[in-house]
Image (cartoon, rainbow, N blue to C red; front, top):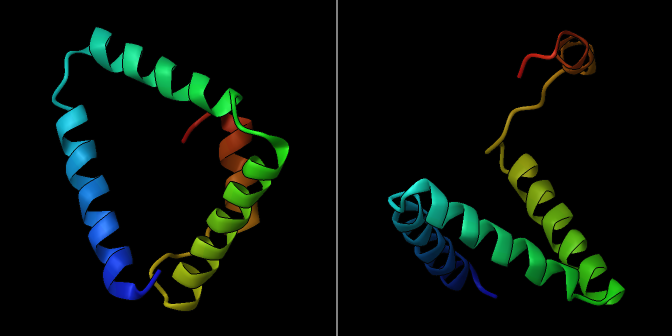
Length: 84
């Protein structure tokens, strides 16, 4: 996928997310359940491929300085305190 296709895909997903968030809570819950159930139908190979794609996406974002890391000490402190 070239960068133009990636951008178009992301924009479509952003638009979809925006529309989905306009749904009432029961409808969003139903949609979430349908989407989560669909993941159970994936093969182990498909799940591994999705995780690899996600890891590569995160690495590209990190390399491009699009995201900022959180120190491990802060993460552990927040986990222990129950805050987000």
